Length: 389
Image (cartoon, rainbow, N blue to C red):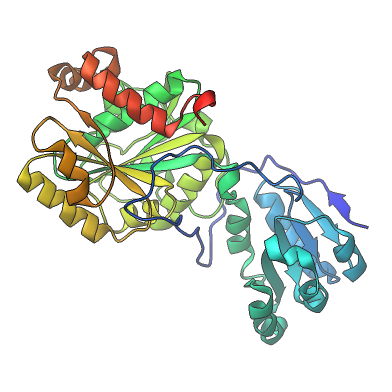
């Protein structure tokens, strides 16, 4: 029979990864819809706990320790009969000793398989990996990679991650990011904002949190692998958790840190908004790998649209994007056609919004009707009311 194994889900240490990993970008393209509500529920015909299947006690114990570090519980199948009798798992951590038995099972059609073995099993693991569609993990070297891979929630079980980009300089990506986050929180969503724009003003400053205690990027710059709950570590206001850059610190977080942080925040929040500014390479590229969609904020002038088209060409991402026009210049009916992405709405110029940012005030609290109407359109796209889903 399959034996449930209770594991400590309270581990919150950083587990440093020794191998590569990460999630694949969502399918899509420039012309895709930006509607970012969860696409489907979890398939309740499958068990959400990983299944560990092996007759090798050393491999089994090592894998269970990695699962514990990811804060998960597991089921265990100690032989081929137990594997055959198990409910369909979403993740199967399979010892190479049971690979022949697993290859005959229907469950593999909808199961993510991680094939594990010891150093001497490398040849057999490589031989079975193609047939099983499995990633190969050699123990003990690959344990930390396994922890990170297990900790990453499937798309149906995590919040939506949305990038906010600027087609040209000075269009207000940071202002829009914090404004949308605040409005989403007012709708009862769990929201986090992350600052990844190298030239950003400081999202904590825009929200009046610059003196509040809590972690900024320097505290997480060397993180990797699995991170536990960050919500209590970050400064926040009105239900919005904020991960900002730290003034006076110019060191960039590593790509592994960006990956670990975004995976953690997406597990704990319903919407995670990323302020990327005009960044396109390095950290921005890593961040986009974890995004479900993006908003491109741009002006309607010829130079600004040219800059936006150039940025889109350099992004080279399958993440679905939509445009938000800043100001009233230009022919709104042709902006989407020029950019090659849908145009969602236009944000009017509003001097009260600029003043709010200078005072650490949320823009929508002081903005005029035009700004409020436009941002309400965006909020409805990010998190529509129950009846609109």
